[in-house]
Image (cartoon, rainbow over all chains, first blue to last red; front, side, top):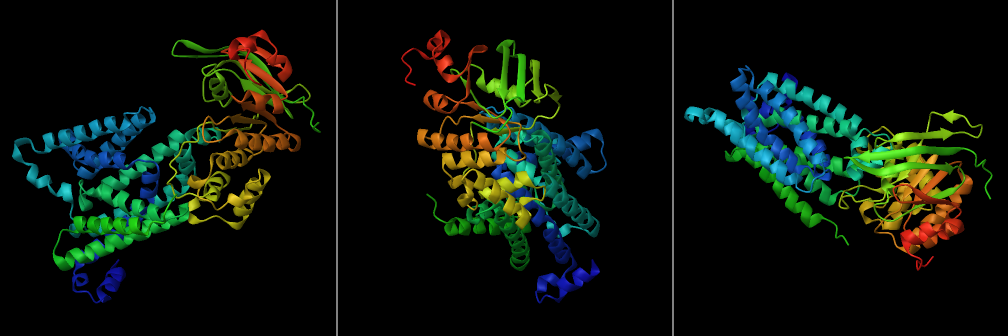
Length: 278
Length: 244
């Protein structure tokens, strides 16, 4: 990693001379491509709301971890996030027209339960960083986890993508071709849950969904095929991550929100660049 | 008319399906022969979709569904190609016809690109149903008839023993359906497979089907189109004034 930090240090930008900015930049390079890839299916599978609810459940995960006496917030969030994701998937698959209402109920309940536990006795202040995250505090150990998540995530993504694509186009068609749609969708939501939970302390509960959805949504406006969608989404996610981090360091703004604002600008530009459709 | 044996068949015996305490299909027995186009007709709610889902092993059923070869022996393997009825999907999805087909033909994730070999396979599959010209079209911009052809091309790979065509209820007009059935008709003489068509268009069924099965939770009548259309059961289901 030292070599990478040296490389970053050679870039003539004052902020990149600091170790914490170099680590944050590396975190952005690890996180954003995975979110860019996963986001393509989240928007195609109409699961933007699902991932939003999933992000909110991190608060409940931390709260339950405290009640159960788990030493690590991350482990508590991961366990709860995976269970929550599978539960929401079950509801989505019941096919009821009010699935979004039910997801909303789950989402609100998980925020309320999390806040209830974490704010007990007026002590929420120490958890407020969970809401907006702080990527500038990331350490070398955390970076290794993110690198591992990136490699494992992309590998799993490569395995499940085609089956998931057929499932998202038409479930009956996918089933008739012997695709175990349950398994692929389950693997997808677990993958999103793990990626979200691993990143939430750096990006924040309030913004994590934007990182997943905005680049993929912008890419969808300009892409003509599946490959372009993935490539554009990863490029936009990387660009916004890097630009947001560096701009926030120069302007002294919070990093997470700056990255999201960059993504929102990209989305607006993509709307203008969108080819006219019949 | 075809060079095939007509002896291989999908043999359904006493198939019943019960869901939530309600019997959706009762004691259905029929043969679907290779080299023939068998049409399944009946009113909405007659159990046509239920029967297809049982064939696709998507619903539990009692009775037996067996694949029998020309020597009257059972074959364990039954590959079913399926063209679904409701092809509702997100039409804004950035996805070409080639992307969809390649995702079914290969394990290599489509977002990493499509190899020349797979592209050639997709092209060949589409050419068989006269749709090679739309290989690079966005799926969401395809007409109902074009999507039916793409789905037909998909359903023919891997080569099915039984092709199940669930008639689209919307998006394909009668002309499009007739063109589609002409393609299916051609496949009947070039592919060794049985074809089961679910259709509401009684005129087209009469024109193209070899064998017709009239269903109303159970088989009311089956045989050649002219025979079935002349039965009192047919009149009872569709009314004697049905223009066919």
